[in-house]
Length: 144
Image 1 (cartoon, rainbow, N blue to C red):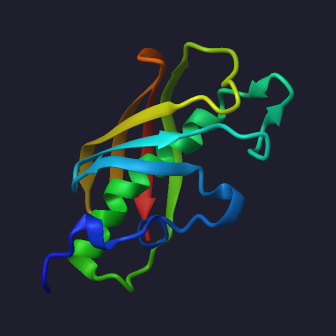
Image 2 (cartoon, rainbow, N blue to C red; image 1 turned 135 degrees about the vertical axis):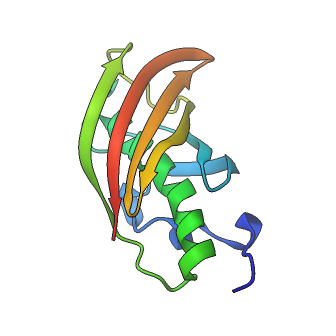
């Protein structure tokens, strides 16, 4: 199988999310171990109110960012038409340093696979807003 470049792919190739649940807007960098993305909270997002978006959504942003790098790895090892589904099976630790995400702000998420065994991944994520750390999250993910 020839090596597929990230530049040849869309977010829909990497993630199963569609419509309003596709929260990642831009991928800055990605390889088979890490990804760095931009997300911009919107009023249409889950857990949004007039003041902003509840920080619990940062877990989904972390999971989607992890999905970008694990999606690239899946495509490179199993092909573009392979099963996209994966599951967030555990939140090992989550520390939030913000009370609300302002609508229209730029949230940068860095996700790195810290452990991998067969289809199980442990992923450490850090998220920032205006170069200030707003969350640290460790997730456990399972790829179909």
